Amino acid sequence: MADVTTVLEDAHEAAVQAQSPKLCGLMFEQLAALSIANARKAVELAESALDAHRKNRPDS
Image 1 (cartoon, rainbow, N blue to C red):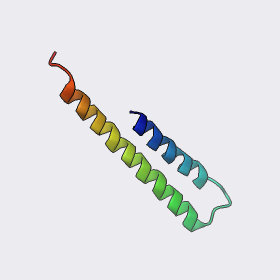
Image 2 (cartoon, helix red, strand yellow):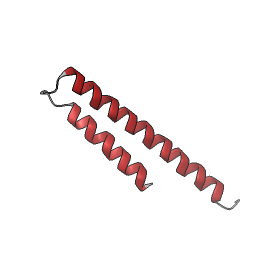
Image 3 (cartoon, rainbow, N blue to C red):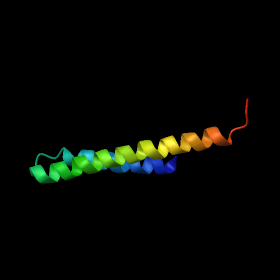
Image 4 (cartoon, rainbow, N blue to C red):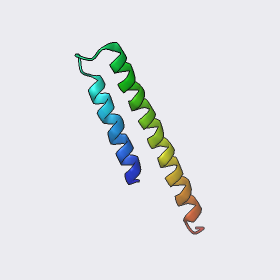
């Protein structure tokens, strides 16, 4: 799950940067898109980790 945390931190950083009032519209769009892409990647990684966990646990 460390990789999920890293990607979420990247998404957060892009979102924080996108909040700057000094950004032009294009830069905001790029940072917002990067934040969204990283958040989606984090979800994919977390889902993969959960699937792997479920496949590897012994039957209860």
